[in-house]
Figure 1 (cartoon, rainbow, N blue to C red):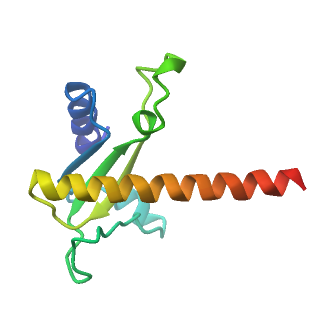
Figure 2: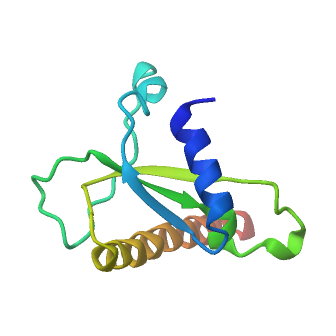
Length: 121
């Protein structure tokens, strides 16, 4: 297991209410993705400049975002890692978190609606 993934697991266990973790990117974090010709997902919050380096990661716990604790899957995890510019203060991280979660939810529901309409026809 990659040390960044293991660190995220521990962090989310220690922060049971958190949905997003912001941290510096590990040097080889997306190496496997890049090796197969894919680019890691990126997100630029409104508070960042277009020229800002994407050297941090926002780790999103999708299980917590979906609020599916009632399904008794407390040990299950599904996390999305997204490249972002460095966001060092808690206040700015909260703004970026809100924007990121809104973007994820919007994309998910748009995709769900598209697929749902495709099958309904």
